[in-house]
Length: 132
Image 1 (cartoon, rainbow, N blue to C red):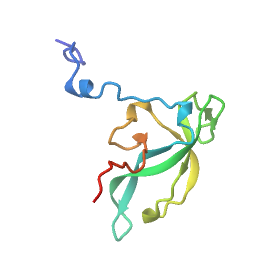
Image 2: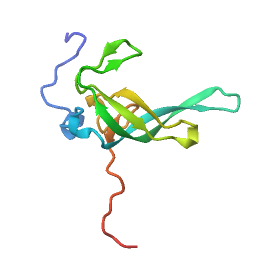
Image 3: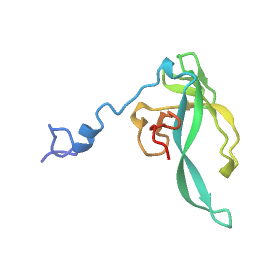
Protein backbone atom coordinates (compact mmCIF):
# COMPACT_ATOMS: atom_id res chain seq x y z
CA UNK A 1 0.00 0.00 0.00
CA UNK A 2 1.08 3.47 -0.76
CA UNK A 3 -1.36 5.48 1.37
CA UNK A 4 -3.55 8.29 0.18
CA UNK A 5 -0.84 9.96 -1.86
CA UNK A 6 -0.12 6.92 -4.00
CA UNK A 7 3.41 6.31 -5.20
CA UNK A 8 5.82 9.17 -4.86
CA UNK A 9 7.32 10.39 -8.07
CA UNK A 10 10.93 11.38 -7.99
CA UNK A 11 10.94 12.75 -11.53
CA UNK A 12 9.09 15.96 -12.37
CA UNK A 13 6.01 15.62 -14.55
CA UNK A 14 5.97 17.06 -18.06
CA UNK A 15 3.76 19.90 -16.82
CA UNK A 16 6.25 20.81 -14.08
CA UNK A 17 9.19 20.72 -16.50
CA UNK A 18 7.46 22.95 -19.05
CA UNK A 19 6.32 25.53 -16.51
CA UNK A 20 9.38 25.76 -14.27
CA UNK A 21 9.68 29.36 -13.24
CA UNK A 22 5.99 29.89 -14.00
CA UNK A 23 5.41 31.71 -10.72
CA UNK A 24 5.71 35.43 -10.26
CA UNK A 25 5.45 37.38 -7.03
CA UNK A 26 4.18 40.91 -7.00
CA UNK A 27 7.03 43.38 -6.88
CA UNK A 28 7.23 47.12 -6.28
CA UNK A 29 8.57 47.47 -9.84
CA UNK A 30 5.06 46.49 -11.10
CA UNK A 31 3.55 49.73 -9.80
CA UNK A 32 2.14 51.92 -12.60
CA UNK A 33 2.42 48.97 -15.04
CA UNK A 34 -0.45 47.53 -17.06
CA UNK A 35 -1.53 43.97 -16.34
CA UNK A 36 -4.39 41.73 -17.41
CA UNK A 37 -6.47 39.54 -15.10
CA UNK A 38 -8.59 36.64 -16.38
CA UNK A 39 -11.95 37.61 -14.91
CA UNK A 40 -15.07 35.40 -14.76
CA UNK A 41 -18.37 36.90 -15.97
CA UNK A 42 -21.75 35.21 -15.57
CA UNK A 43 -23.73 34.43 -18.74
CA UNK A 44 -27.50 34.93 -18.47
CA UNK A 45 -30.42 33.64 -20.53
CA UNK A 46 -33.57 35.64 -21.43
CA UNK A 47 -35.13 34.92 -18.00
CA UNK A 48 -32.03 36.25 -16.18
CA UNK A 49 -30.91 32.77 -15.08
CA UNK A 50 -27.18 32.12 -14.97
CA UNK A 51 -26.38 29.61 -17.72
CA UNK A 52 -22.60 29.62 -17.49
CA UNK A 53 -19.42 31.57 -16.92
CA UNK A 54 -17.21 33.23 -19.50
CA UNK A 55 -13.57 34.10 -18.79
CA UNK A 56 -12.28 37.37 -20.22
CA UNK A 57 -8.89 39.07 -19.99
CA UNK A 58 -9.47 42.54 -18.50
CA UNK A 59 -6.86 45.28 -18.55
CA UNK A 60 -5.91 47.42 -15.61
CA UNK A 61 -3.11 49.45 -14.06
CA UNK A 62 -1.43 48.61 -10.76
CA UNK A 63 -1.57 51.73 -8.59
CA UNK A 64 0.10 50.29 -5.47
CA UNK A 65 1.51 47.01 -4.15
CA UNK A 66 0.61 46.08 -0.56
CA UNK A 67 3.36 46.79 1.97
CA UNK A 68 1.90 45.15 5.08
CA UNK A 69 0.06 48.28 6.27
CA UNK A 70 -2.80 48.14 3.73
CA UNK A 71 -6.12 46.89 5.05
CA UNK A 72 -8.66 44.52 3.48
CA UNK A 73 -11.84 46.18 4.73
CA UNK A 74 -14.13 43.29 3.75
CA UNK A 75 -12.23 40.64 5.69
CA UNK A 76 -10.98 43.02 8.41
CA UNK A 77 -7.33 42.07 8.07
CA UNK A 78 -4.13 43.53 6.70
CA UNK A 79 -2.66 42.38 3.41
CA UNK A 80 0.79 40.84 3.67
CA UNK A 81 3.68 42.52 1.92
CA UNK A 82 3.45 41.96 -1.88
CA UNK A 83 0.24 39.93 -1.48
CA UNK A 84 -2.23 42.29 -3.15
CA UNK A 85 -2.37 45.19 -5.56
CA UNK A 86 -4.53 48.30 -5.67
CA UNK A 87 -5.80 48.06 -9.23
CA UNK A 88 -7.45 50.70 -11.42
CA UNK A 89 -9.73 48.55 -13.60
CA UNK A 90 -10.63 49.60 -17.12
CA UNK A 91 -14.38 49.69 -17.87
CA UNK A 92 -15.87 46.63 -19.60
CA UNK A 93 -18.67 48.18 -21.62
CA UNK A 94 -20.04 44.85 -22.96
CA UNK A 95 -21.18 43.83 -19.46
CA UNK A 96 -21.73 47.29 -17.98
CA UNK A 97 -18.78 47.12 -15.57
CA UNK A 98 -17.57 50.65 -14.77
CA UNK A 99 -13.98 51.74 -14.21
CA UNK A 100 -13.11 51.32 -10.54
CA UNK A 101 -10.14 51.04 -8.20
CA UNK A 102 -10.08 48.06 -5.81
CA UNK A 103 -7.63 45.83 -3.94
CA UNK A 104 -7.08 42.41 -5.55
CA UNK A 105 -5.01 39.49 -4.27
CA UNK A 106 -2.81 38.25 -7.13
CA UNK A 107 -1.52 34.78 -6.28
CA UNK A 108 1.90 33.84 -7.63
CA UNK A 109 0.59 30.38 -8.61
CA UNK A 110 -1.85 32.07 -11.04
CA UNK A 111 0.87 33.89 -12.96
CA UNK A 112 0.53 33.48 -16.73
CA UNK A 113 -2.06 30.70 -16.49
CA UNK A 114 -5.37 30.41 -18.36
CA UNK A 115 -7.89 30.16 -15.51
CA UNK A 116 -10.06 32.44 -13.37
CA UNK A 117 -8.02 35.08 -11.49
CA UNK A 118 -4.81 34.34 -13.41
CA UNK A 119 -2.75 37.41 -14.30
CA UNK A 120 -0.02 38.55 -16.66
CA UNK A 121 1.85 41.65 -17.73
CA UNK A 122 0.19 43.55 -20.58
CA UNK A 123 2.90 44.46 -23.05
CA UNK A 124 0.43 46.19 -25.39
CA UNK A 125 0.52 45.68 -29.15
CA UNK A 126 3.64 43.92 -30.35
CA UNK A 127 5.18 45.38 -33.51
CA UNK A 128 6.97 42.67 -35.49
CA UNK A 129 8.19 45.21 -38.08
CA UNK A 130 6.30 43.53 -40.93
CA UNK A 131 4.47 45.86 -43.29
CA UNK A 132 1.20 44.79 -44.91
